[in-house]
Length: 485
Image (cartoon, rainbow, N blue to C red):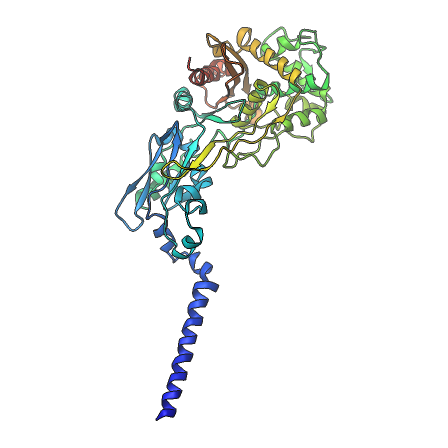
């Protein structure tokens, strides 16, 4: 009898060992495989068991969480969702996250190790933590002014504080309400299909993910390149610029919208946006120096993040002289996001120094205790300070006496550049209206805001569409909001 009892004990011990070995295999060796399995809903259930942290603008939350009482308990809500959608993105139980909701998901969802007072214990217990908050750099008044100005028209606005790189406004229009995508019901599925099939593309973030031909606003870059290269030494000297200008190596003639551009000075050509003068200037500067200046401003940079990724703006470095002429007036293959053109204006405003743009001021625990500080990074000099001073002079002249008078603000110094970018087969599309600018209150030591505006479907006849008529008034209101005027 004792023999059989011993055998039974050994067998039970072997079974126990096998059970422990299998438990170890499942919980340790294959834990990641099971955690990542689509059939495992525990991670999703745990993720939505606590309220998500908030995204703040001007100290006030523009997001929230509502208790649904369902298995995926807390659902995301948005206050004034269409206004802030290009910044917040969406947090959906069905379709994931985008923009700040994605870039800061660890903090907002409570899974970031910084939120755990005892990280090792948190790994063992897997207890959910209340999400932290993300404090943005946005200026609420500037954001609202940009959104009102676009008034539902297709386009975008980006505004930056030149001295720091803080993003003050980021608006894309038309927009959508991220709350429609928050849950996992059939209504969410229907909203997703509708938004993705909408020809107006309301989910496209035109401020950072859409590139456009910048048109004459790129003449800011061309003028800076010409000044830095010594091709231009006197803003008021006559240039050897025919009108029309025959593109090098071709029989194609480039013309201007108005008269008075033949041999015009750089100052006059900048104020009245003479294509012939700046196309020739770009050719005189040459591909190497034009490309170097454009890239210093941020063109061809695939690593721009604010903290979510920004589509790279492009300046073609492999062009012939005719293509270079067109590239130098913001046509051919030259493309830019509104954020990139705001960076160009900001660099001029800050004495030729470009500060990388950023959107997150800091992250905090739910109670306000700081987790991480500002995302500000060192800037770089993209043109000589003396060149920047002359560029400020040129841009101020556009607003005082040229095509940008609609951007003038009483009691402030404003500089700007208009642009009307052709596009489509045979340039048959409705031109894009552009305006880039900066503003400085008369009692301020330096410019406080740089803005870029693009309007895709300007509400005017083709011949009347212009950056000065359609985009400049929007930029003016954004600048006024920042200056408090």
